[in-house]
Image (cartoon, rainbow, N blue to C red):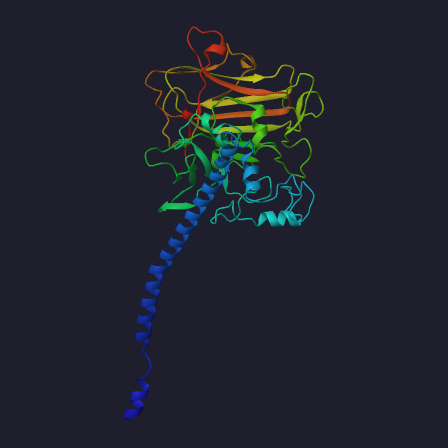
Length: 417
């Protein structure tokens, strides 16, 4: 009888089992979040390292080219990292062009390109593909494309070089932010602690019809962009500049000729080039899309009180039309956290090519340190010509715009990260 009782007590009681299970559950509840947080931090560090590697690759280009930056930084990074361009024979021997956004994917080269991980954040499940078919989670700022590194109007520590698309790295609680790398190669999660904004504007480009309501939709709801980047240049823009970093971007379906940016020149007797939607009509940049849309979003901080003028410059005798919609609150301050924009106006035809009859915004003394929400939209419809935007500060008593121009520089442009 005593032996039987001793044999029975060799097992665990139900209470003992429950206590052990409770302890294991408690320890798991403590350790799993720690493991997941450590994993997320490791992926965040890897993400910032990838962004910094892209910025360093672009900036190192200047060593061999006397300070000049590559005209098409995305293409240069792809080539420098040893991958195939869509303009050359593909990974599987497919002839160029082998990548088309409308396919999903259609050949071995597209499959191989879609597996490349060097340009994607580990936390982004399905990044958009660049024009060479490679998933890319990062935007290279326009300030690092086609300019001289020594001529940038911003301090290297403030000039965004590479920005991560989307907010997927947790700062605390439910606050998620993006990684940014600056020209001096330091990185940050979101903006610096001292300021709620970063330098530049957010720019989007379409060469196919943009989404309905593209001119009123908030930034977070804009879709189908063919190109997206931080605008880090002065707010003096024109058509020819786009063709350096938009070269060979293609639009679905089936990449129809005439609906793509293509840096191919035909030179006329005058020896210059312009943008056109028609090939072969003299001195033109062929196969620039006849229908295009650009949108900039952000904030302005004027360099001082005075009158600021904006007017489009359109080539004489151009076909089609360019619409410029300029939206901005210039009479009062709007909190940085407010995503709204104030009254907007389409630039009237009388303002075109009219430096003495521009749209004018007057900034009163004491208001130059305020941030003003800003949106600029340029849209060409069946366009065949050249266009540009001129943004200047008027000098009182000086009639000739060639002498009164004080450009609004990149130092006055901001966006909320």
